[in-house]
Amino acid sequence: MSLITNTATAALAVSMEPSRLKNASLWGVQFLLAALFLFAGGMKLAIPAETLASMGSPNQIPLPGLFIKFIGVVEVLGALGLVLPRLLRIKPQLTPLAAAGLLIVMIGAVGLTLASGEISSAAIPLVVGLLLLFVAKTLFRSQGVRG
Image (cartoon, rainbow, N blue to C red):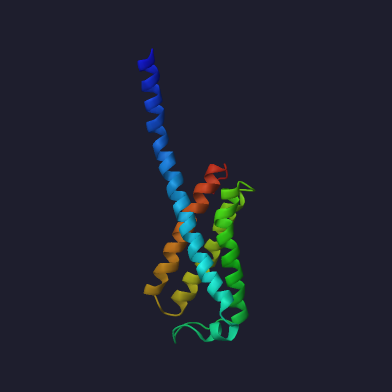
């Protein structure tokens, strides 16, 4: 009888490994993205608006300093939303919404980068956007929302 129990326990442990790996990779991506957006948004908030407006390569489309500050606030709040709701288990449904909101910011970043003629530079916000899509889609599915 114990052989059957041990076999069933081992089979259950093996079947749980992929979901455990997926959960660990999801948390890893969430923390990586949160760190990226905390840094990027924090820098946008720490640097004066006039300096922000003048930064960038010569062929970059200039954006108003206050708009860049707004993007900084969105990035910092989005970074907190990527981790804190699930980590604290308080309204965890906000985490995929934060990922979706930051995905919209990254779509804008890809568009602006392409419009400025820097095709190869668009790869970075594109990859970040794909990671955000992974987080949003995975968490929406785990909560039973189809998207």
